[in-house]
Image 1 (cartoon, rainbow, N blue to C red):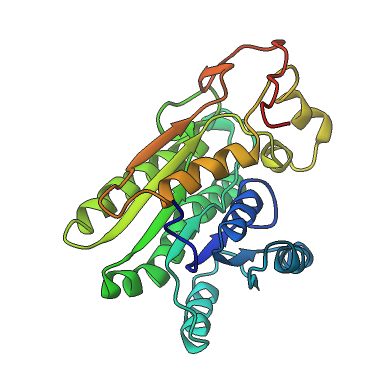
Image 2 (cartoon, one colour; image 1 turned 135 degrees about the vertical axis):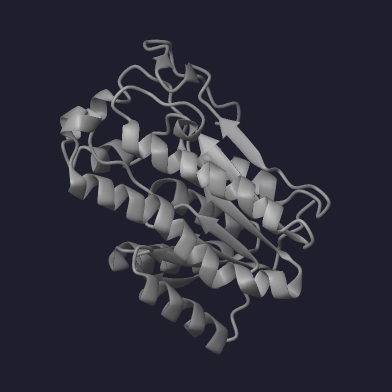
Length: 265
């Protein structure tokens, strides 16, 4: 059963990886995606691709979720244009470096905290009130297994993802008397641009993160997001941890196992 057809969903970090996969899955389900990200060319190309491929009226807006004034202006523009947001997917996030805490970079720390925590807060504060007023809506925060367990040299990144988990749980307490739901999807190792961003474009170093690992693909996480969104209104999936079969904790991964076959391929 498709319970979300005809709705509108804002997806942050829609220019690649999990965000792009979520946008595609939503469009295929008949949801109008509003694509948000920093790379205008990618947003425009994805929106143009989704329209004829799925019939969805994909909208897009260049936006850095760290920019509070920009986020507020974006929310006002949606309201002025008569766009009612039913779903918010807070996907934008990043990691920088693998430094020991006492050797860490303040610049890296600020970027992770401002994106992973403040970005989620900015978008949620701008769009959640209208959902509460209508007594209906769903916010999905894309967290990480790093929000459940720390790993060596992950210090500040793990802290930001623990914060996302805490925000999801505490916001649910605030929403208890409403029909608005908030969930978090917390994946393990996913093969995206994540490591490339973490290591500032060092492709060789980033590639080693996935060597010999049958990692999750962005579509796997998007499928989990769609499951949560499509649950009956009486069901709120507070948290879902999704790991590749070869990973059982942030730092325990079996390398060298043959990639699993896709039954639908």
